[in-house]
Length: 321
Image (cartoon, rainbow, N blue to C red; front, side, top):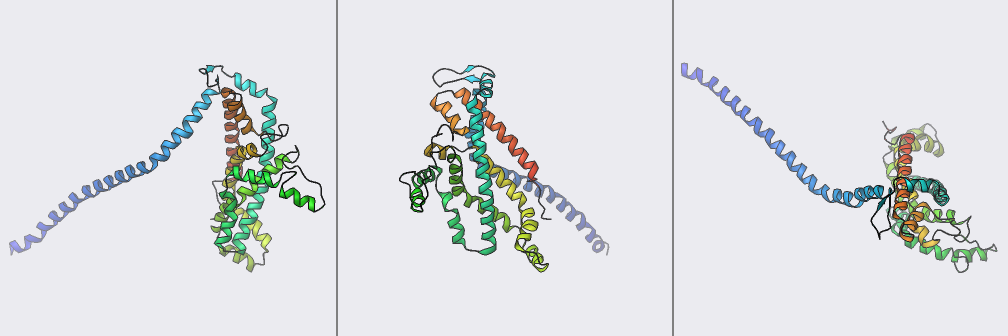
């Protein structure tokens, strides 16, 4: 009797000790798994990190250093302090190029945003065709150089099919890329044509996140399509629209290739955007120090505009609760 009654208590401590010994092993296994996942993540991140360091961070730091020097590739860089920045402030061509760039950005962003938003809403409300979405994206698959050359031929004053149509309608031919008044708007609209489909698809993806229940409830209350657009679509699309605006503004300030293949900065510097002026200063006149100073100034301007846009549009917040 004594032996039978004493045997059950003897198993409890044994089981408790086994469980206590098993816990540290489980914790060590989890730590080991976490370390293994961290190493695997580092392997996948390494190529992108290496590319960032080599092709972005190092050139940026090198450019900032060169902006304080006089450098022409043939002789060692000579430290000149703020001379390049003083020259930039007193350079009328720099300010004219900045103004031309701002004019281009305003036209490009204004037309592109309105057109892309309209296309995105129409794609969401009227059709579910994947083929149509692919057709909308087709111009974006073409490089800027090819798009510029195609439109250069279409809009040629004498031989372009665009001016042939205008002439056939009885109107005077328009020198789209050869006139100071028409050149920048034309280049802006060429880039709108190329990028509007991609921008529309980004906004379309944002529209997909808006619940259909909200539209159905608004219809039951008798809201029109126009009212639903302003009271439902725009407030809930705001974070995506803000990010798209930031991306397109940064890209628009960096316009170069379309100008290079269509007008080369002309006529009479009417399309001499800032990036083209920087390129001409560096590789045309070998003034790499001065070109670096203008590049740093553009970096500061874009950083300030991005921060201002982010705060004004409240890009980090959503009204979708």
